[in-house]
Length: 635
Image 1 (tube, rainbow, N blue to C red):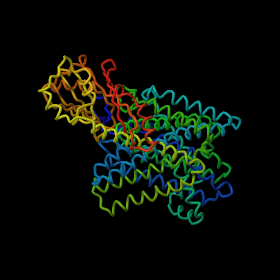
Image 2: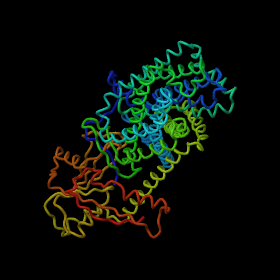
Image 3: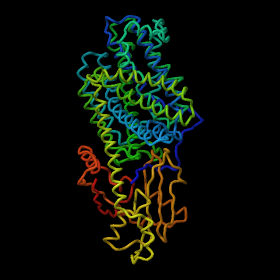
């Protein structure tokens, strides 16, 4: 049946907020900007390392600084902050939200299918990014110990593994307890990196001329093809830009925009220019210009602050992976998973044990395989730029159809963004032999999972319709039948309200009885993040004591069927939870004589089906009130 998602909260948290408070701004810093805020740890040094000390001319450094600065302006400020964040679904953002918006304006099924595919690719690459971000962020921060004391170099890898293990092990507690300190820590982080940059710029103010885009042109003229290769490292400065859009539902558009424009962007720009000034004065600082910006007495405290900032950045990406995974479940892309709410007041704070375990294993494999942030930088970028490209394609369709932009305006604005995104993406493809294959492999694996699950469920629904009895025919025969009605209430879950649930037919076949009150419940996923409580339940009486119930949830909610059914009493429909039995059909998938799926897809679908979370747990149905009836389905 259709998956969905509902919150146990009373009202949807749509974020068209007008009041921008200090606490809200701090929350934005702690959640949204952790990833992009820690990019100075490795972005510039990775770009400069390609040229080495011998190639460290003023033109090279200024050119790279100019590319980083204008990437922050074009990709983050103009594309995401100015344009993409306007495309929200009741205040919610993210690539799956963009998919829903794009599907609404699709006029042809082929275009809708293409939109879905693009969104799946973007979501899969997002998960690849979710594995790499904690690995490279924590490694780059702990590597600051080498600057403090070279003798500590052997301890970098073990400490990184311990930090990552503790981070994932604490996820089940939720972010509520530590969330309050995230914002102040990140505020201190941005103040510190901005101040360090200002101090160094004061010693070499000429570095500020790199704000002119002419230095990008001069760099390209002088270095030729190397410019294109350098873009693969420049993109490290804008990793995390997608979080601005994805986390819009938590804070609203204005706090994210203002935090970026007046605080985060200036701090990042000052730090990058400060690092550039340091390298121009002393090329020997090339290996780690970020920590060498600090005076000797400040380096160890800065390592601790950087480690805390990278943990926060990792936490934001992990939480984002939970949210995207839940949306994928609700939209039918992956099987049901356990969703645990870690806060009694904030619906968005969730914990998915399966996703947490998979991310932990993936991150540890990356850390132990690549060992250094410099090596891991080769794997970083493909996933990020791929997601950027997918978002641009979907946004162009939304702005063209929903916002009624002209073709020329759409092509001019989003054509520019697409050229930038594709330049970054193609440049990062050059890293494939050195580690860029990692996010691609993860993305392909997840795409196989999502597409196999989606297609398998479609085939199951087709077969189910073939074997099912139309509900109208059943109700027409019911008055003349001799079926015995027994006391109590029976709830039958069904994915299609036009057909009789198989569990009901099997119950009649084997037990020869029907409860005196019957509810045929269909769960639907609405194309909004959250459904208002008053619109949650619809009840239609089909026959005496037989009701069809439609329960709606937004794609960011987690379902609770018993609680939703209790709302019927407010509508005057009798419902006694303690006298209710829930009848579910347990689907047993078997290969058909002529399988409709390739062998590998069928095998994958069977594995996913057997490991999916039971409907009782996903829909929060009391296990002691459930009757399961097995149904064999051949596909």
